[in-house]
Amino acid sequence: MSRPTLLLISLLPILAFAQPVAEPAPVARTFQDPALDWGPCPAFMPEGCAIAVLQGDPSRNNADVFFKVPGKTDIPRHWHTSAEHMVLVSGKLHVTYDGHAATVLDVGTFAHGPAELPHKASCVSDEPCVLAIAFELPVDAFASDSDTPDDSDHDPDRDE
Image (cartoon, rainbow, N blue to C red; front, side, top):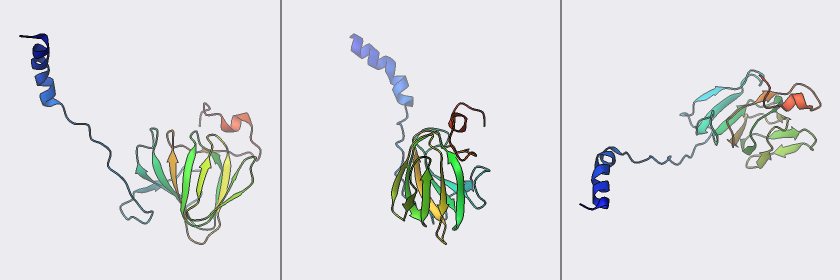
């Protein structure tokens, strides 16, 4: 018997048990979807804040979430290890990143938030503000208490 034939015969038992790798399914959701599983935000976020995972595992890279706060609510200064890619899907949101002018997000507005740059926001509409956010790195948020940034405020290696 030839070597290729012997190799093929030796691989047959392995190939018989091989399972095809499942491709991820496409996802299309609205923030009003009753099937969404809304969970709590970090403790420093305002009452009524909620997060729903749209796809991925928030403890791993490349997860997408809806982030929701009630209308007329302030979001305290905080930062994320990951950059954020955001689209506002409900409400009207004012966002201010340290060292930059405030930005007004209306429904449909895309915004990019650089990694580790502290920011705060205010939902100025009566209806809830809902952001669709794509994170590059695991989802996190760290309170940033001081009014001026310093190295201790946004050190990703510090203990929280």
